[in-house]
Image 1 (tube, rainbow, N blue to C red):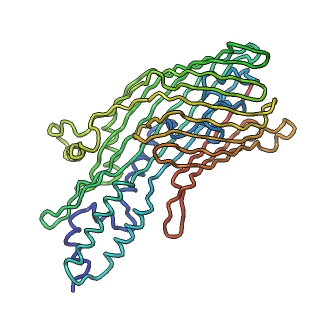
Image 2 (cartoon, rainbow, N blue to C red):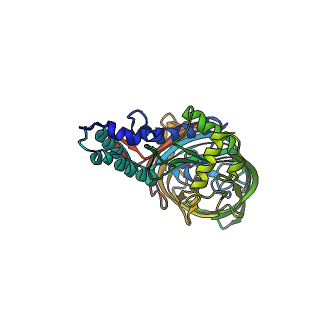
Image 3 (cartoon, rainbow, N blue to C red):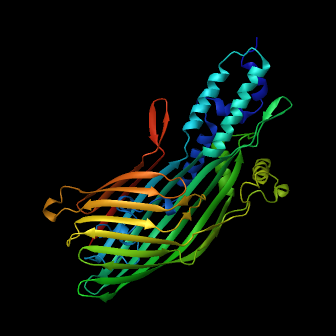
Length: 451
């Protein structure tokens, strides 16, 4: 009678194959989290491109809102449209994650574990363990992906509402990184199981300095038209690497972090945004054209010139990227695609009760290549001054109309008009062992002051 040692003869030689099956391991997902955590820890501050909204904009939506300094810069024409401009200062930080639909993966890994605990009566029956592992690898290649985002900015706005002008200045750092699995079938060499299955990591940290002047250009008896422009100076560090999960010697974290330190490319670029806002006592509508000139940033090359690399580990990583050259781009440029966005809001004359919505008219891709096209809606109420001890509240809903098609319910609070906390949870979950976890979540903390 054979036991799971029969499967061991097929799998024992492959370190990565064993690690998939260790209950404490889940090597692929763990390595991805380690790598992304390393990237975040190495950045001074961050925000995440099309995947993560700024400050209370997480709930309000991606248009302008008079109750928040942070969202007033969403449209470069939004700052002078505020009923009170003066001098405003703020700071915000946000974090978020997004995972693929990994329900099937988690269940499949458990099924393989159960299979290996069995006692097999024949070699052919034992081979089922390898076949099952192949299926897990395929599912990892399809759904085994994740992303971490973090972000922060410091906005400053100065202007005069009665004169119809304002100037916004913002310093921020945008960060987003994702991992996915490049799966490869198992093969047997000298009684050892081998695979080229690899972890694919892409990320960017983009420092940003923005200058956004806005001006009222028409006044039709309380119905005002504002226009604005924004100049963005970008300094980007682009990360990209492929790390094979078989044949690696050393600590998993060190291998990934060393490779990311090596595989980075830095560049700078200028970007331009335009906007217009129409404001009445009860209505606000606007349009924004983002990334008009579509600035570009180059990733470091992977899988190129492998024969000239002396270090064995680095050469192995290079060859792994070269192996997947038909599935990934070895030399790649990330373009900040231009995007048109519309916004509208209904409100009372004091703009305390506001119903707002924003919509991206076209799809753009983030640094990981995932598509985003946001639809967002919200309802909010700003309390009068004599009730400021009660926090202002807002509720919202946002949905990615492309890519993951994840949808979120969001809630936000602002205390004393100064401190804000906003959170959004996806209604799609990952279920395992009786527990449910949202596939995506985001949280923002903001501070704003007026003088």
